[in-house]
Length: 183
Image (cartoon, rainbow, N blue to C red):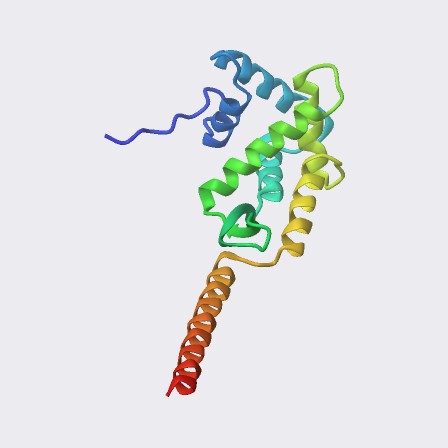
């Protein structure tokens, strides 16, 4: 029987329940719910919008589309060390939101503030208004790195295939020319 995703007890939303799992420390889920609900109350005081709408919009703004992964090349360089290249991968829908939640919690922990409630609420507000230096700037930095390393997984495979085919062709030519000189 597949695992059923649980809803949070107040708003009955899956996204808030999953967000509480990322805030969770030492198995105390009630404390993580308190942090989220109080930060949502602060958001409601500052902006007259629905706080759940604000949370979902910020998660959509922060979600990355691609991610960089390092990959070793099979062919060794002249010095004998394997060369490493960073390749961009497209993320599936579920992974995008996982990275967005992690980024939101990480950015709110880095923020200066008295407690996690105020940090999380101000981070959500800044990301909603596109003001913040933390979550949105981290996403922009990763996008800049992705633009610098534009080699994607598919292009990388094509490059490797071309190298192999050229090498095989060169070896065949060398063997033919060598046979000509012998005979």
